[in-house]
Image 1: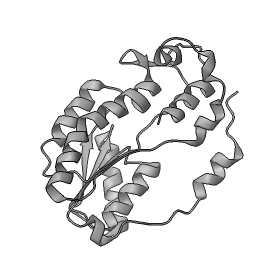
Image 2 (image 1 turned 90 degrees about the horizontal axis):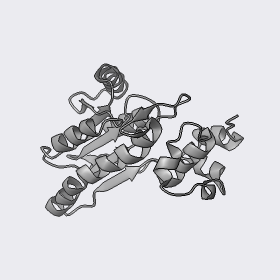
Image 3 (image 1 turned 120 degrees about the vertical axis):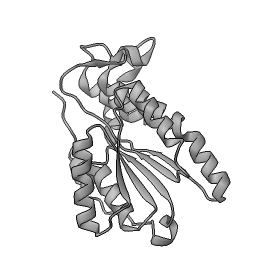
Length: 207
């Protein structure tokens, strides 16, 4: 049975320093994936509160994204900043379409790749187990798609741009387990009977 350590729960309430300011966010464009719930929602709300030019909620469900946008605008009192774009990381076509749309932005100062899934039922997508597609290959395909826009923005503005992929402490739960797998690790993790703790430990170590 898959068990989470107590620290996984207590760490959710850790208070971190709030770094961004209105000065550092003014006029900038941000993308947050998985922005309609959890950490992504809170990060998006936090960014909107500093009045950047735009914050793009990259979400699988437009309906859920619009609901999150409404909550963010109500909480911050800021309208005309948040916008919702569709992104399904389990589909490479969706990732490519999103990445191509990003190229049309005037600038991209940072992207927070927060979206992930943790499935209790095995299911495939794009030739891999879905959590691998969403959390690894889809996530890094998106990173590759937007990297040039980040570089172009840095060159244009003379300021640093940022690409952040959210990780997890779950990687520490798979120490010593992954060495038993041979060959292509993605193929090994996509086998239906692979233990869940091994799969998610691998995912956490990758990101």
